[in-house]
Image (tube, rainbow, N blue to C red; front, side, top):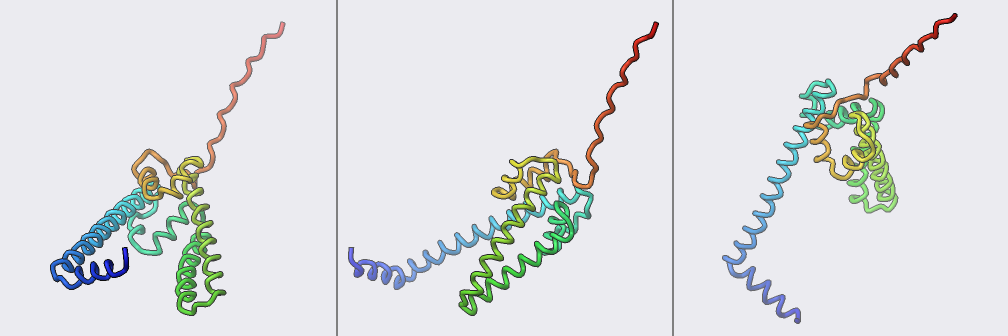
Length: 183
């Protein structure tokens, strides 16, 4: 096939108002479907955070405030210092990425990629610590890393209990040995 065929095909679609309207309609359907999926995902993530905060004894309304909810998520699983590191590194990575694309500087791009790797590593550690905070093993951490929304919902709506602040259970005392009567 030659390029003349493609040029005529493109011209016939774009010159016919009904064909062009059909293309625009298809694009709008895809965009509307994508937006609906994003809204459903946001609602499910908010539900999961709400229930997780209830289980952890944190005021549930805190999951509705952007950035503050991320801070509280990391604080639940880890500690306050790493919550600040996580938030500021994520914001800094976004700013560095924008600066790298605006200046087209290789140095900014390298620093931006390194910052993204740092945020990814911190996120993986956060997922491991969150699974441990709710009493789960490494399999749950892998699930939180790769299927975050599903595993967050499983933690939120399942039987998981928040155990981060609790002291480890003391071992049961050994039964007292009975003394043999002496003759």
